[in-house]
Length: 373
Image (cartoon, rainbow, N blue to C red; front, side, top):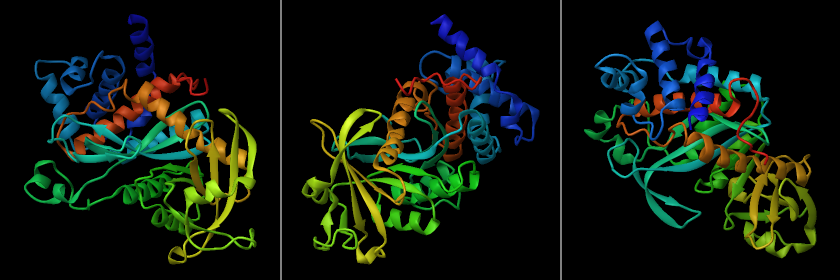
């Protein structure tokens, strides 16, 4: 354990000051570096009390709470600096935007509501968040976060109590994903994407319309019940009535081909489809992958020029993000913020993302998460 902490301590010492240049006061910059160091080296849960052990003085815990929840520093400039650092060190292949739930035992932290988990079919108490990750087949680093806010949090006195800004409105998973895409475009580094989006809770058609209008290359995971029409310009012998994507994939077995993916040989089909007329009738490709003993995974993509193998390579970045979250994000306290305030949550997640970068890339640029193994 001591060797592990020594590695994390070296990572923290190599962060460099430029990540926090946007902070106007030297004390804020020093506090940010100490906070990240605490996320990297403090054992156990990364509560404000535990992180305060990295700070000096009898009022350390109070100072940490003030720095995160009340000190007037902006998190977006730091996220942009983080993205530039990751871009230079990692040379990412795509943005991965995913939806996840951060479980909470109480109901006081901002954004906590009963959240339906589509993969388990159950509801859990927690925060629904959308993360934006820069990813390669080996490593992924989060650089931006959206917190989905239900209407009840926007009513006073609750809104005032958790300091939700007046500019924040009620947000679904779809609107959070749209905001994540817009932020990623403004951050830069990967012009035009590609974007790999895994958020089946979102309104897929509304999200796809937005992505098509933005002109970005994308691959979006879709639920089996998503309605699509076959493209009769490509498949003239078939009808064009709207059908669930899962039924299309199950029916068109003749389009399946054996493909070598990162997970080994598998069957996959590229099905030319058209969005429902109500969604503009745009042409896209439905990629259906089938592995032994597993239900089909379905992806809708605008990347017509990419081979099925190339599309599947992009979809595998979702797994890299999942592994990075469970092995690195959780270790640096991404799930541990117990404060109530909206600004505090965003500041903690920003500095936890910096800690994730330091741990995953060891600040020297060599990935350490083992995403490809």
